[in-house]
Length: 427
Image (cartoon, rainbow, N blue to C red; front, side):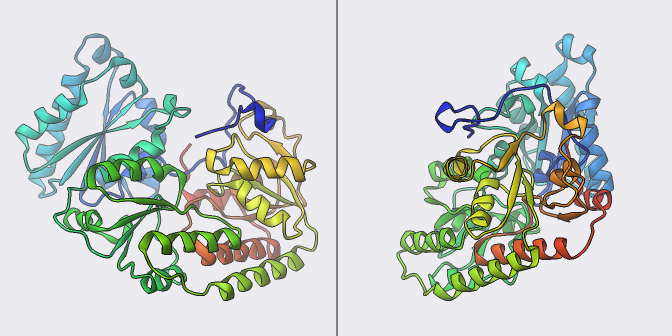
């Protein structure tokens, strides 16, 4: 998924020891997994591996659907690792049953060491399911060592969630919006436009409170992928359910949004509504925001949006003063925008947030406007747009929402520490 080391891109990225700023982070995989209705999680691994997830679950009020089985070195070297997980799951299910809280799905999270042990998760799940036929058991992975593979943790967990969908007996006219972890903004134009294309209902995982209701997503005739980590899940759903999918990634360029809607209409076999008014309104919004900033330098980071070079290009093409991008690498779907920036706007600085040099605090730009918490911390800016890649942005409404955040950040100073705390980021 990455082209950070691609020679053809003339990449400035390099491997280093890793520095992590206090403002870096996103949703952890456990939090992502908790989107699955009526599920419960058993996190099995060394205590250090679950520390951040456990603390964030407590801080965010999510601790009632996750338990931790801390495994010692003795558990691992003695050969009792798998049995410890089975015994832990049995004990947990008994505890939940007494309280009338038996889950429909138990997600058993394992860590990097499991990749090295080669656990037979299918056999483990089959053993548990035979004892508890009312519960589905799926293995999930919090294993950062797979970050540079095709299926890193954020990709894997989305696939695991949607793998619990049963094959539907019939399809309806609905579409699934896959990839976003939060609901799209309720006042977005997409609901009306999709309805006019005959795509009703537009389903998101956040719509459902029960596992039975969640199964409705198996009926949809098309999966619309909004974020790169959702592609793998859509590919697997096509194989299992025969549901085609369309890449419709979040973009902050109104022209790209128009192309996406036209592609959607074609995939649905429908006429595309007139979009010229939406596109013109976005361009007016860009112009108004540019006037508010009045040449103020902009810095954005890779935690703020799924495709930071897409946003940077949209701003640069409309006359904004983009000074710097703080990005660890380039995801494949953003590579074209990265190459455009390197060829057309070589003066824009690109630096990696995890390079240990960031800890020296030589990269301050206190007068800048930052998009994203990490860039705000590294630059020392007091004007920070609280963007974290999971904000329900999509379509023309997503562009408007981003520009609203930028104008608000320009108008008032921010308390970054408070913003990071409210965001509930996990390293």
